[in-house]
Image (cartoon, rainbow, N blue to C red; front, side):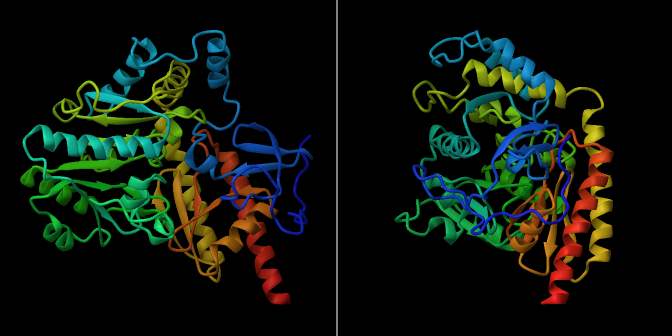
Length: 412
């Protein structure tokens, strides 16, 4: 049986694990996970951790999901990789299912969210070029955004902490105040190609763009003949309680970048587009060696088998409501530590009154994995297969961790 936490788990002297031949770009914790089951991970001592981070919104169906495991095994002795010079039937199947359930007509497959966003940026610029407006290259974005780690996507995000040390910022990206209609309207000019935003900013602090603002953006794009790009890398594939978060407010984009939960832990991303927009991307304008490989496509299709099944998104919404209610009680009880809940579906955040990193560490000591976000927020993004019983255990572990924090504070 898994060992239950007693509140005295030690992370080691430094809280860091050594990986001597790997770039030191992550502050890795001194925990070695060896297996996963459902929404739980187990370490070398068989202690269970509830994963409310989902590999940062990636393991959408949890760990060792039977259908995903079966799909991987069934395709292990098939063709793993083909060049995109050849027909890949599973690619067309996944693309058609994405199009049938969204605004899109065409799909370009990638390996990651950053690549999907880059494809969206290139497609937007190419669209205007193909229509005789080569000067339209600027992408308008919003403060707090996170669009990836490539040179283009850190420029799109506009955050100095990601730009520092990497030379001149890639041109063509203009960052505006969050959800500011006046600033956005004034920023649009003859060089504007597109507006890029996350319907709910993940890294930016679980901040939702209001429905009224999204409608304003859509109307502005239509009026000025510019494109609307959604980054739904983190919010997509059921996490919001809808297949995609923008469907909550019924405000459709022209392009959309997705990834993370699409592969359920297997690397796969995609850029979705309307027909007239995708038409600008002709042979030779873009490509990917690994994007859309047969194995990734099978895994993406397996995820959609589950997420698009009748009743699944209703389950997500039901569990999300229970988790939100539980966190609301936490806010009421522990008002010295946290002040509000943010987010939608199973992408929720608690805004902290103390450093969010301290609370993330406290959670981990009590067998709950979470991750911080901007604006001093703690992110909760458990797998979409979370149950009511799991929610009760999550809230119980949050309470235990907060009691521990307050107890330490009283004794210090």
